Amino acid sequence: MRYSKAISASLVLLVGSSVAMAEDLGQLIDLPSPSATYANEPAAAEDVLPVSLSDDTSSTRFYVAGIVGASFATLTNGGSFEAIPSNVFSPTGSVNDTLFTGGGAVGMAFEKPFGQLRMELEGRDRGAMSGPTTLAISGGTFLDQAVNTTASGVWSFMTNFWCDYDLTDTVGLYGGGGIGIGGYQYQTTSPDPQLVVTGANTINSFAWQIGTGVTYQISRRVTFDVGYRFFSIGNGSTPLLTSNNSATGGAPYTFLGNSLSAFTASELLLSVRIYEPFRGLIR
Image (cartoon, rainbow, N blue to C red; front, side, top):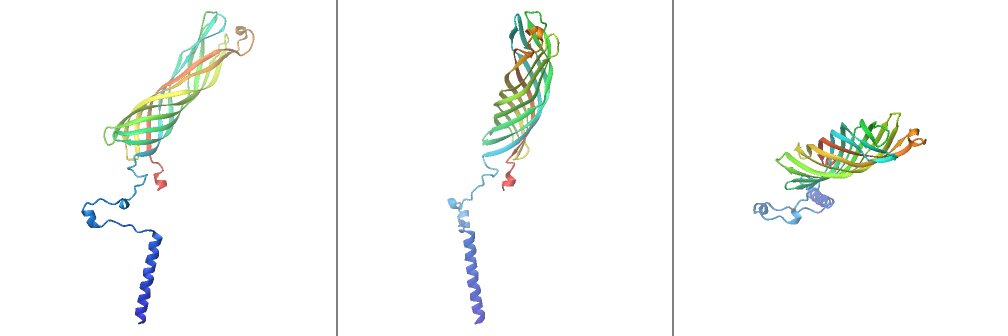
């Protein structure tokens, strides 16, 4: 009799603990029966498991990219002004150099049947360039002046739009462009004592680029691309000053006029895009 009472008490405790565990775990999930599965009956809405937004099948994915390459750059000079009667000054010539460029981008990729549409924010920097140009002078007694022109700290911040087309499961093509802002430190000097001319300014102006390239998908989350871009920063204006007293009537560092400059470059870039870089941390 004591054993039967003990067994009965154990059963009551077991049933009670099972009910408590069920309440802690929440409402039980009603799974479809095997017969319903084999009969190819459609699953009820409550039987469908939700899909995580961070799954690989998501149609929109965040990515980061690192960018390095070579910028075959040209800095041009222009403008014309008559600072001294009968003497027209015209900054002319250009500086050509190959600069290292590097930076990065963050963006969103929208999956499409043909590939992807991508929107990104990109920031890049470029090296310094320097070379000889000319301050042409016509109509008077002054001779053309050789000057040295420099652009340093060439930067850009762009909003880009790219369209990726899949050729195979791993290889694709892309094209597009972007707009934004860019700038550099401009400086020009003429050391000739006959007419000493100097000018320096921080140039910030509208920038744009267009480009195309080839992509190789290393994995679902990593893509490597090789691309070409034509990049341009709009005209900037720099005041030119002279410290030659005899030429300007005695006042030191007299304003002559404004020199116009523009930066353009053909760029070959290597980039690695990493999709959902923080996915492991989120999970």
